[in-house]
Image (cartoon, rainbow, N blue to C red; front, side, top):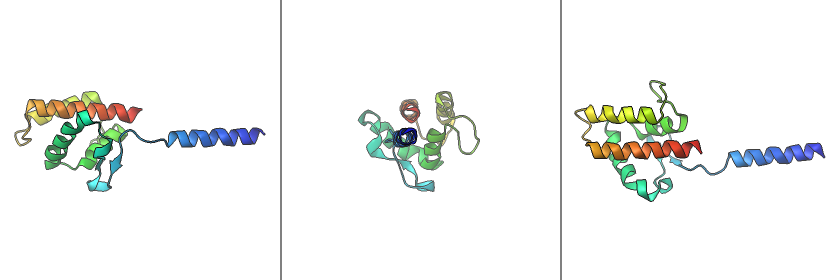
Amino acid sequence: MKRLMLLAALITLVTSSLAEARIKVKGRGDNMNFDPESIEATFRPAFDLMSRKCIKCHTMGRTVISVQTGRAPITGQPFNKQAVKAYGIKMLRKPNSDMNKQEIRDIVLLLNHLLDENMK
């Protein structure tokens, strides 16, 4: 009887930990990206902007990995809300980023939202 209850508890834990992720991902490697269908409608314009502008210098896969793991894949530094803000400031100062202050603010808010959703 104890084994049966333990097995039931284990199955419950496994299935609940494999529950639907808030932000889904499509593709693999360099083609990895957030699933647009899993992005809330209020953040969709920022997602479209990020998908166009950020890939000029790096793949979206790097961004996905950063959000999922909480670490920047190349430097290994933490990727949290402070880091997102710092990256936004860095992009604002880059001459070739072709992004204005409002665009960067929108992307920073999106990334913060994705980080929050990843923590759920």
